[in-house]
Image 1 (tube, rainbow over the protein chains, first blue to last red):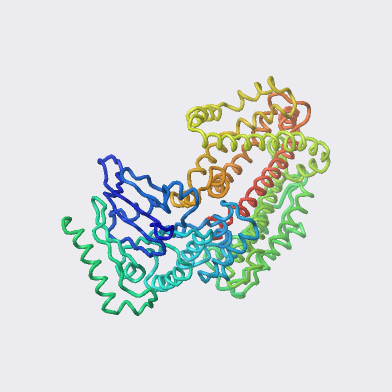
Image 2 (cartoon, one colour):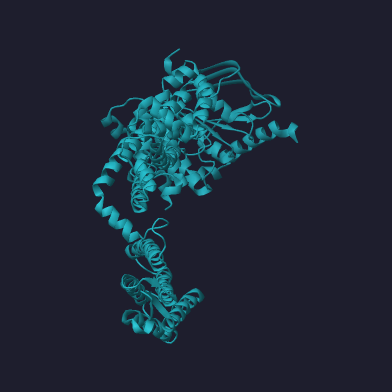
Length: 263
Length: 375
């Protein structure tokens, strides 16, 4: 098997149980999933379905309690120590005492890049997210959408092949969100990264992804994996097309099926 | 600029000024020897009282704001001139003081109600108000102590304290060097510095967390009056023993505040560092210490006052014949109260400067904190 064909993320019977005072919570139950290089995978499901937990397991921010998972062919911890992924959180989580530029330089400083390289990379990713004029500003001087763009730039700065995004646009309004979705697709197209994207918006998942993973809660498990039939080059108008609506319908059906025993 | 009409407070103040001027005109001003002098026979007092009475026309005409300021300043000058020529103040003198004070209050009150000024003038007014207030406290202090012949040992007038300050500069400078430059600053730096390092050691090791924190608690509870003589035994009479007392006093506030500060980084901020595979020290310097800065500066500010108190009080328990605490305790015994006040004035000045420098540094370092960037 050539290196490119091997999955970037591969989970086999992956389980994670949190021990709480009210007894064990099965956040993830026997997840089997392969993510290939260059894919844009969305995880969608109601809250408590383990989509964020799964992303955090990939990032080695949570330890699984059963099954196996590899990230880039090695364990999540090794992948984390090798700085194999960039993580974008729900909130921009920029450090307010650092300017936008300095925030983006943060991972580069930690990873020991040279001064000139830090400058060069910071400038490049700022351009990539259209913030080139805001490098000297401080996070609290920027709008929420711009802050989130800066945090994406920060995750891109050290050029990891895998980008993990945990509901990055969840707190933003519809219009800003549409705009950022469009930009994210362009960015993905240009950089050819593998992206794992957690969301609870059906249109967002369908619009962005090449693969949609529908999950359901208690215990967190995968209900359906939908390979998108949409072309790679998409504009926002595609959301009116029958193909799009069909995919959205299938996602909704999956979500309903996962929910039915609850009601 | 907009003047607006007089508010009810302004009307009351204007009436007080007019009424007090009238009362001053009709009453005896002061005693010179055994004779009573009336306000009408004292040209300066009479002129000011008449001018004050004449301001009754302000209810018909609009007076500029500066007029009240000038009246107040003229009043202060008149009071000082009158004080120099009398032996004991009578009712008329106090009424003049009330009138001048009412003009001063009216001036500040009207100034603070002016709207639509540019940034510079707004700042200037923000500066005038406390300066004017401070001057008036000194004037009242001077007028009451001298006018009512308050005994010197109870409260000397500020003018005498000032004379004492200017004539004993060399003694004050020596005391300042001994207490502030040697004891307070070195004790402060050692106390805050060691507590900061201890906080990081505790943060690194859970064992120390259980062991050192209760000890810190215990040390904080030690009474300074008990510790100071023991420190003199240990470290000698000179500034080293005072610095040791200050170390004990400042250690705990710094330790607790730094430890609290180190816990305030949010989970998300810490996770971010983890995704970069950042080490302990990288996380400490790039995340946890910056978020702890407001707490650390809080401790630095508290400790600046504690260190000064500690340094002065510790000198009460054995010291070479120099130092602010030594001077205060001996000059009280010799009834040289003006020297005590001179030392107090110097301590107040040094303390506020110390505090001010730390507060300014804090503003520069934690410029990003919501409490500072808003203002």
